Length: 120
Image 1 (cartoon, rainbow, N blue to C red):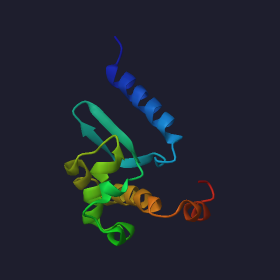
Image 2 (tube, rainbow, N blue to C red):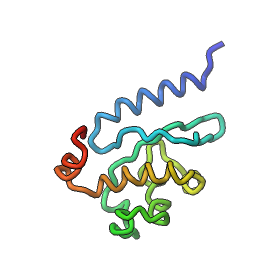
Image 3 (cartoon, helix red, strand yellow):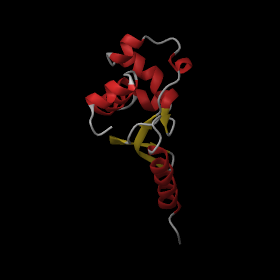
């Protein structure tokens, strides 16, 4: 009998790998604490480059400084798979910081990101 959870995970992984080629998505952020949503287990997320409208009501300075309140507001808008506000609020600080670092990198101009990270 096939394990549907494994098949679902393989399909999700394939979708993430395909999306990773997009410059609008971060590399996968491995989570120290897996998020469980029913039978689904989320071991990593990607951060989608936010559009200006998705930053409405937020301070770019606070996002750049990784203010927790700003990250709690923006991450549910730009994570792949989409995380709920409750899931983001329940993240351990190390996972929140890792996601926040990806958000902050999108605030830089492309050439500044490339200068900061030669692998980009």
